[in-house]
Length: 372
Image (spheres, rainbow, N blue to C red):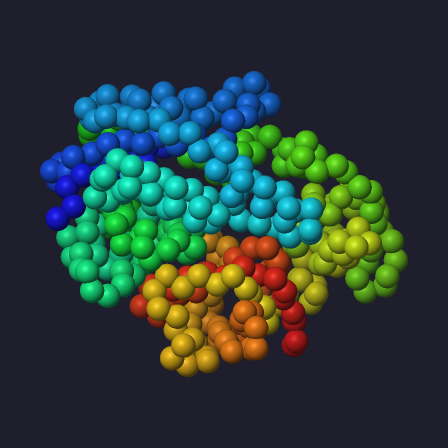
C-alpha cells in the first residue's frame, strides 16, 4: 500500500539500518537529513557536519537519494525557546519529547507527506505499532497504537509519547523487532562498519560535549541566590542561578557531614531549598498534577474519570503503578502513585502505559507532593 517512504537519516547506525531494511523490502526510499541546530562545540567543531558526512556515506552506500532540510528556525522557535523559558521559570524541560512532537513528527512529517507527496515516513526509533514495522496491517478504521519494542532496554516510546495520531498512522519503525546488538551486526554485514562502531550521542543535542552550566550561562544571566536547608531554614551556601540546578541534583556543598540535594526551587526569591541526604523525604513524591495532556489514541478518561495504568517520568526508570484522575474542574489531571518516587521534577513529562505494553500518551508535570 505504501511504497514511497522518507527515512530520517541522522548519520547514525539505527537510521542507516532502517534505510537498508526498507530497500530490501522493496520500498522506494528517500533519505532526509535534518539540520536542527547551528552551533559549534567547545573545540570549534560542528558535530552536525560530521553526521552529515556519515549520512551522505550511508545513502551513497545504499544507493538512495539524500535531501538536506534546514529546521534551525523551527527548532529554535518550537523547542529551544521553550527550553530557555522553562529554565528561567525554575522548570526542567525535556527537549527530546518536544523535538519529536514539533519537528520530526510535525514539520518533517508534513514536508515528506505534503511537499514530497510520499506515502509514509520511517525513523530509527526503537518502538512498535499495531500496524506493524512496515504498515503491513494498515487500516483506515481505528487508531494505531504505540507499543514498547522487543529491545525494552532501548525502548524510545517515552520520547514519542507527545506525537499525534495522524503522524503515527503513517510512520514506520523498522527496528521494532530488533535488538541493538542485531542492528550493529547487520550494519557490519552490509559494510557500514564505521557506523556500527560510532559512539552513540547522548544528552541534550544542542549542548554537545560542553558543560551544561557553562552552556546555559550563554543564554540566561547568572543571578546569585542562597541554598537553604529545608529542615532548619539556615543558609548553607550560595548559587549562581536556579536555572543551573534541577530537583534531586547533588549540590556538593563543603563542610557538611551529609551531602545536600536540591529539593525545591523558589523563582520569586531565587532561593534553592536543599535536603540533607540522598533519601530525604522531601525528595520523594506520590501525588502529581499534570497539564497539556496528549493521548495518542482516544481519551480513556472520557469513559471513566479514573484510569489505573503504569507511569514513568524518565525513560530509564522502571514503570510503576498509578491512578490517573480527571474531571478536576479544569484542564489539569492528578496522578496518584502506588509508591513515592524520587526527584519528580516540574517541567518534565509523565508518560503513561497500560499493562499490555502500550504507550498511552504523556502530560507535562506542573506540581508534585508527598502526602505520606
